[in-house]
Image 1 (cartoon, rainbow, N blue to C red):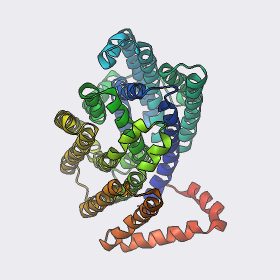
Image 2 (cartoon, rainbow, N blue to C red; image 1 turned 135 degrees about the vertical axis):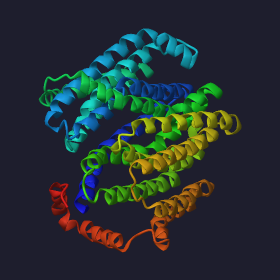
Image 3 (tube, rainbow, N blue to C red; image 1 turned 45 degrees about the horizontal axis):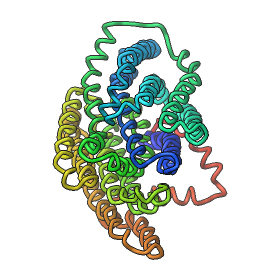
Image 4 (cartoon, helix red, strand yellow; image 1 turned 90 degrees about the vertical axis):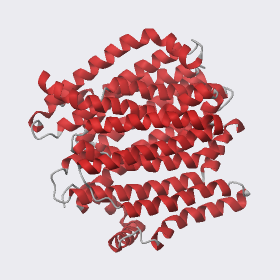
Length: 505
């Protein structure tokens, strides 16, 4: 099992590096997006609404083909025909993307009117639709790289795409003065370049094959996941749609900035773990130590996620003041800790839900996420009129808890895994106290505030020790890790040793 965990950690680190680059690009652009020379506060709200609209659009375009492909790729009945399965799904994705583009592009003016009560953003919406269509195909190719554990190729190609998108975005905004349209034109070009870079890899993994019976089975499996995936996206964006309809674009702008800061944790850690562990989870379905492996993965990822939550919350005030070019955005500071805590339950859900996938209970997952989305919408309707952006943040936290708890209950019934619930509860309670302490510390002067915040960040994992969170073997492992990597003379050897990590125990 140790070898499996090491392999997962290695892939997570590589994916994390790539995802960190994604987030760094986003943070680099925030000073531009919040600069009144280029965008107003309302414009930043428009950017936020277009971003979440793109997320919903991708959920439609993907049609859960990636999830079906992932499940069938490792199916024992199709392991000898993986290239054929990929070809069939790739063709299906191309058809779905093309058809939806033909349907949606003529409706761009109507979408602009619905979202912004103006047709001014119709051209930007057209570019968003095209970028999303190409990106849905790219996601399928990226899924193949993850299934084949090609984490280095995945990271390098995505980094190239990010550099292209960043450079073109800055060029279109700063030089060409294209505004919001320039953002999405850069995304179209970046996604096309990504697809071209991987053209050889894609064709080498294709074998002409089409079987209606197999495709139907995959769609029957995937349709509940499509509904669930669409509802999951809506669960994550209904807060901003609600703010847009019940408050104002300025509220959307503040909430969007808070989301961008807090989502560093999700993108760099939670999503990276998700990318790394899905192939490992499916490959270990029949291994004798699989359930202990699943349990420890949840504990370890939850610990790392909570450490990041505490750190991000403590220094969110300083970060927002540093990256925003206007005091108008400082109101976002108060809701960052709440949004960060919501990500703790997002991580719990991402791991525990695999019990449903292993048991092929995709319909159950779809029902859970639809119910959670409805609850989220109801909470937003109740809380936004009372607390504005704070109400939306609390609604997100509560609905993410409901989402995880529903997945946990039904996944355990379908495929029981002995998760360390006591440790997770200790982690959440103590982590919440440290996280919310940032709201009090923010009132102190800078000279006093920063040292205390650094002290709190250091004390969090120490306090867990007194609640018997760590096992003796884990303490010894951490000591060995510290000794190994603190010796700078052995740095090259230690880095080379990472290449030797495999999935054998």
